[in-house]
Amino acid sequence: MIRRRGGGRRRNTEPVELNITAFMNLMVILVPFLLMTAVFSRLTILELNLPGPSTESVDPQDQVFQLEIIVRKDKIEVGDRNQGLLAIYPNSEDGDYDYDALSAKLAQLKDRYPEKTEASILLESDIEYNTLIQIMDRVRVEEEIAEDSVIRNDLFPDISIGDAPVSAGGA
Image (cartoon, rainbow, N blue to C red):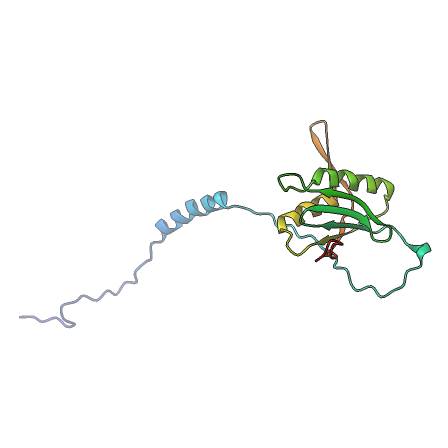
């Protein structure tokens, strides 16, 4: 009887080739499919200026128009920091802000002060983020519809945000 070494196993002396054809076919199909079904989101970043502490004394003759939009829970107030309140837009019966009236007033102010690009948006602490975005959009750009196209005009693109002052009615 002849005995084999190694317990009857055969030794392979040839290197084994790795067959990746099936994997490559899968990648050729999978990559375009994933690219077509991917959701591409557009991220927009808006640069804001936060107002700093003001310690300078201003001469009344040198006072210029400084637009302030104060957003309260029940109304929007448009005013000039130096001259005072210009307009008040209370919420509608269902609690929505009057964005259209705000846009009209801002367009009117832009006509009066065409060189002005700065505006301050002051918010009460419990105002929703979506409301801030809506106000910022209305302050930055005016949209007009003319002959099946939308025309965008810059209003006050340099926006500063801050806390609204406490209303006269109490805290």
